[in-house]
Image (cartoon, rainbow, N blue to C red):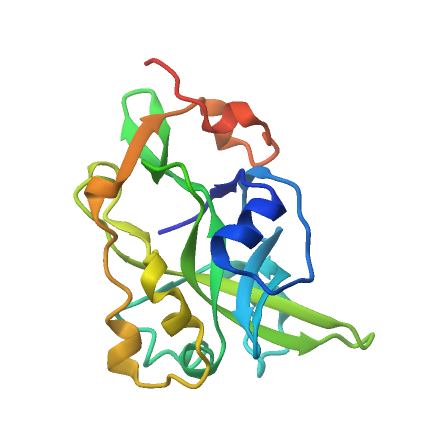
Length: 222
């Protein structure tokens, strides 16, 4: 699964790396993002846009806003059949911007956190789905989910799932709203090559969602 991640890159770096044409959000780094928080995603509405969105998908047809906090992840293997995600999968795909993500290993001293990122140190995009609905007050609310897939050889050391990361050369294909062939889209939701990633232990302070500091992603010795 993906229940916590980090975005350490500044907006200008994200805009450059992903070829964003319109930035509707300019967030500062967040080193310990948890469900229910505002994050940034990239969508394609005629051009690549960087927008703010709440992590926790709320389907258009539900009246229960709290349900979104439970829909932080969508499994790639069942995404086509799930009523909550089926339409968004075909029409409202996004990239959830991250520099790395956390997973926990069960040890004798409890759950021990690890941080996983690209060896290159560059930001990347989780495969995501988003939805925009209007609140009773007339405000548009964006909510989203992160798609997960089987873990690669690196991530499987601590967990059997990982976020589906879209390769750089496939980002435009994933974002293109005119592409609606499930087989083509599902083919993008593969475990990312382990050799391009690295993992290191981090401070147990990460266990608290309130711990937002560069120290959250720094290696520690155990």
